[in-house]
Image 1: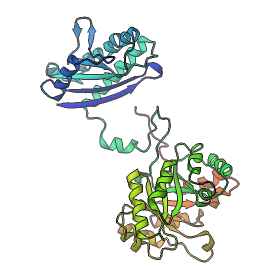
Image 2 (image 1 turned 30 degrees about the horizontal axis):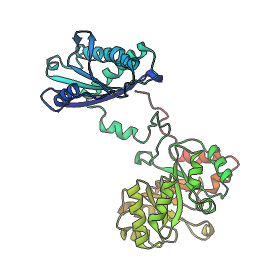
Image 3 (image 1 turned 180 degrees about the vertical axis):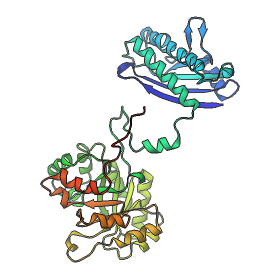
Image 4 (image 1 turned 60 degrees about the horizontal axis):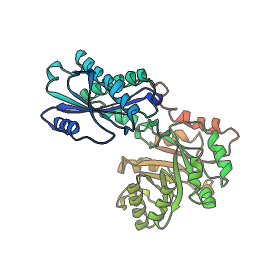
Length: 393
């Protein structure tokens, strides 16, 4: 038996973070336990947890400091409240039948404990580490987290130390609203971003005119006001596919756009490089006569295909919404976006055909009330997510 548990409890310098392994004495965990107890490391000396001197808890538990112990003050926090908290949590877990009584002499526990060098309050150190250890044990023996929990949270979560979210475009949150920031004025664009309401359905696009004026570095500039937003670099790449993906990636783009009019070699290299770096590859089908045929000819599919009507052709050409179903029939996992003079009245038509991303520019960016104009689209696309989410941890 070999189980892994983790828990974070508390706040401030006394916050507790526990990682632990629980398993058979005769197995891998037992071997690691013996090695940890006999092969000491300077500043990370393990200690057998005891409820009081001469009374260890069972299953026997090895407490290992994560942060290097620099002096006796640091050592006191580990040998005092942290060690006692772990031991008491293990004993209570047995009493509460989280750990089966008949396993206390067959299992051992290795518990890695975080103690901040500036932690001062011994009661809080004890309280937080007790709670974290008990929770980590329960999670370990329940095989927490289940896969559906990971899938639910992986694109919603903000890591507290990092402080910002790394956005993706999960399928469960479709359709999305992509706002094309085509105004070639950086300060005005930043002002527009600040007026856009926060929503997990919104994608920001660093438009081609903006990038042509300021270069790929403008993506980093936009990050100053859009730290957690999904940002697309609309390069409309026609040549040197790998190079242009690298340029956008280095500036922090989450996705890059190539033109469907590029040669097959360029597109294939573009898609390969985007997938290698972990950013979305987007193919703009403006003026591509047969998008399905084009996609079939590629070595590897992009993540998104855009059915794009150019601004200069809006009065002459109709939207090709009927192609949405054709593309999705052939490539069910491919996201399909529509662009070119989209307004709230045309959104239902595209949604009916199964579109994944609605791309809007002037209707929002040139509006006198950017927030209201944005919400006109969001409300038609299912509204914001997590409005009724309950705090469970």
